Figure 1 (cartoon, rainbow over the protein chains, first blue to last red):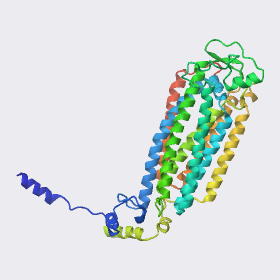
Figure 2 (spheres, one colour; figure 1 turned 180 degrees about the horizontal axis):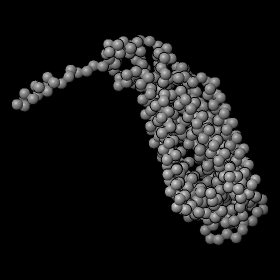
Figure 3 (cartoon, chains in turn cyan, green; figure 1 turned 180 degrees about the vertical axis):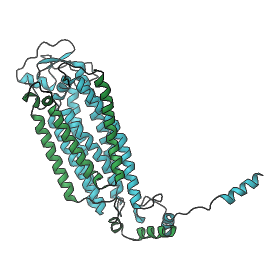
Figure 4 (cartoon, each protein chain N blue to C red; figure 1 turned 90 degrees about the vertical axis):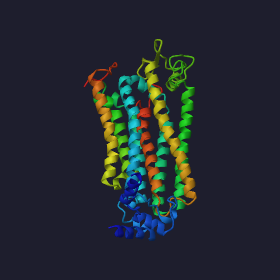
Length: 291
Length: 136
């Protein structure tokens, strides 16, 4: 009985399917899909058009999840900026617009070099491809360097929200003025008004602002720039690997799509910063000392 | 059917891929000139957004809710223009198929749902009062 079933299964089972693409690969005696010597078409796609479309849509699906993750934080920002409007203005004044502008410039430049790297991969110029990818890595590294300098300054000026000393080392205290607005106000000879416990003095609007509300601004500032920086670090590491691969002869012979797909990720990270920059740095305008 | 496919793919393998790809609608090579125009316009927009931030519109017409919000409206409009330029040209969506447009658009459609639905809830419950809040 059992033998009979086995036999019938055998007779029903279709003969092993050999696709035309496998034939094509076998004709060249090559089953390794990672190398350039047989073209970039993978065996589970019909042709290059379908393969490019599928990979691009796959990457956009991933970017969709990334956009949704960031937009949660952006919504959080929008809500609390509305709720704690004055505190967000005061928090934003503590940031250095020069560093933020420098970072925007550097990141836009890195997007340009990345776009040029994609172009060079498409026309098959591997030397320029490597050069532009190294340029992108340098600009990306410069961004992270500036960010590190900025975070270090934020730390020393008492802006890290989880510290007990948040704000208390500065702003309304005549002796320990550490926040940027307090520095400028002190130099300009401005005096803080009556500030109750748990409040900081807003020199621009000449009124006390709740310290806890400014804390929320800095919480979002560190979360948003931090998550963005994690994406930059991940991007830089992948870029480093891709540079080494390109130097070892990958991404030639029409197999340029990995560069283009990485470019999508890099430009996405750039877009996040395009929104972070005005929301975090520019909302309070150029009024460092208050007027 | 199967035979013609084999022929098609054999031709792919035997010929120069660059010549093949000029017939590939999913693979449009954007000229360098376009990228240069794009990066220059992005830099110009960066300067404009800095310039707009240096002007305090709320002080121009005190108490006017539109002027009070004008700084953030201008900043966000410029940010959206920059993002659209990057998506269309640097991310090649302009040269991509309709299906890629749908996938790229869907992501931002969900962001709109997130903002509109959640803000509807918050705003209709009066949970966002602060001193000096604008009333619409």
